Image 1 (cartoon, helix red, strand yellow):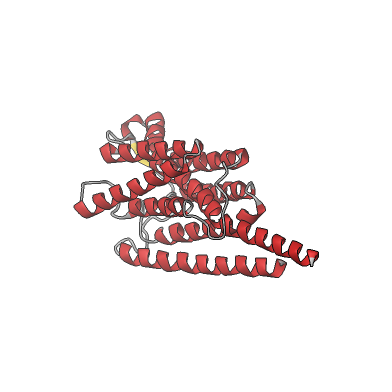
Image 2: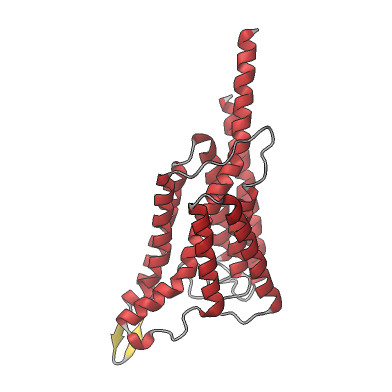
Length: 281
C-alpha cells in the first residue's frame, strides 16, 4: 500500500510538471519571437547604415519613418521587460502592439510596410506571451527566469537576423556610376542567416528544463511554419530570398495557408508530446 501511495504521488507530480510546462514553453518561445521581431525592426536601420558606408549616394533619406521608429522603440522596450523577467508587463506590451497594428491596418495609416505583415508579427509574439500567463490546471508552478545560456543564444539569433540586412549593400558592386546587385550572393546570405537563426533558436531551447524542451520545440516549429508560409505572400520577410513572392497579390491566401500550416504543426506536435509522455509512464 505504501508503494501504491508513492507511485500515486510520483504520477501526480509528473502531471503537475507536464501541465505547467506548456506555459513555460510559451514564455520561452514568445521571448525568442520578440527578440526576432526586434531584429526585424532594426534591419532597415542596419541596411541603411551599410549603404551609407559603401555608397553614400544610395543611402535612403528616410529610413523607417515615424511609425517604424515607434515600432523599433516599442519592441526594444518589450524585450527589455523580458530581460528583466517582467512577464506580465511584456505580455501587456505585446497585446498593446497587437492592438496598435490592428489600428494601423484598419485605419489605413500610411505605412511603407505591406498591410498585415507587422500585425502578424505582433500576433506571433502576443499569443505565446499572453498564453504563458494562463494558470495551469492541476497546480502549475510560477515562471522561473530564463537561464543565461538561453539569453546568450537568443541575443546571437537576434544579432544574426539584424546584421544580415547588411548583406545586400556589402555584396553590391559599382561600375560606371551604377550599382549592381547579384541575387545569388544575397540568397546565400539569406539562407545562411536563416540556418543560423534556426540553430541559435534550438540552442536556446536546449537550455530549458527537460519537461519544457519538447513543448518549446513544438511551439517553435509552429512559429517557423507560420512565418515560412507567410513568406509566400509578403516581400517584407526576414531575408531577401524571394524576388517576387508567388502570392504577393493574394496576402489573404498566404495568411490562410499560414494558419493551416501552423495549426497542423501544432496539432501533430502536441500529439507527439502526449504520445511520448504516455510511453514513458
